[in-house]
Image (cartoon, rainbow, N blue to C red; front, side, top):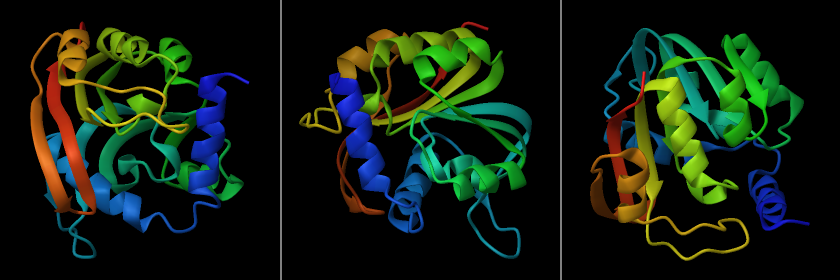
Length: 197
């Protein structure tokens, strides 16, 4: 079994039944903020994002993509994990297209998008540079949030660095040390980058 396949097995076990994703969603609100998304209160929840009709693809969005908190969006999620059937149904009810597959391959077959979102996923992929390359090719802009300078393990085979991400994205992201905000700790990298379209 490949290192990537082992990492996917680890990740699938980590998510389990996907029934309690609150901890991850709390982190995602911080990621969204750093990626430049502005939330609004719709009278029920303050955690909504208006995408004003844009098409967005979330690479590696897993069972609880930020797209589930968006309105006025044409959304697509790509993720390689075998998720429970109810997760696919949830996306379907939210009118979000869900594609099970690797971002390195599937993004090539999905068309072009106004935005590509990449958050807390590149450490899990088989080829993080290829993900960025495709994101630049098929997206007008890329919103990204990733952890850098972390230790690799069976679920995270890649170590990302500020220099690598800057090189792949063709610009300079912001780097920040988080110390427990929204359940997040560690050195992170984020920004908005222009794609090739």
